[in-house]
Image (cartoon, rainbow, N blue to C red; front, top):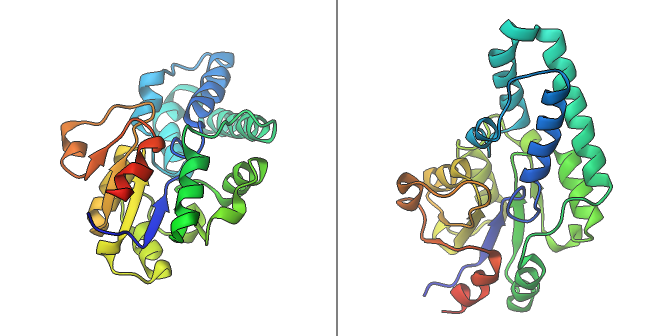
Length: 220
């Protein structure tokens, strides 16, 4: 078993149980204005940046309710999500603290590469008191192209300054897996709301139900 010298974490759906909160906030706001929205639609776009998602909402709903109402829908949904995060409603996913402790004992560098906004990343990390666990954080603001483009993982590789074959990415979404594979870095998927497709399965080295399996995998 190879020894990894750097671990790159996604955030939403991997470190924090946030995806269900994003959906909950969006569905609540959609219902208030009578917008045709569904969990299936939400699942379709998991892993893309906020900016890309908002563009999609405009494409879908501008012809129905107009751009101004779509902007209001986006803003109220975002604000509700921030309120949920600040209230501590986003729980750490199973195995996070144990994995961080394991990597600390092994002195393996770790960082976050997320398509989310830095403001939300900081709220979640600070609320759960784990900001100090990561050498650095890459966010939506640090790249021109979000996942599935590999740009964010190429930048993570540059920061960690290790050969790609010594790095490991942990992801929960299809777009994250595609980005990791395109960057030429090993990736393990921990599925959250959406089960992996056969195309995803071809691009990962392992699929585990939770982060609790990672220490044993790394110890092989």
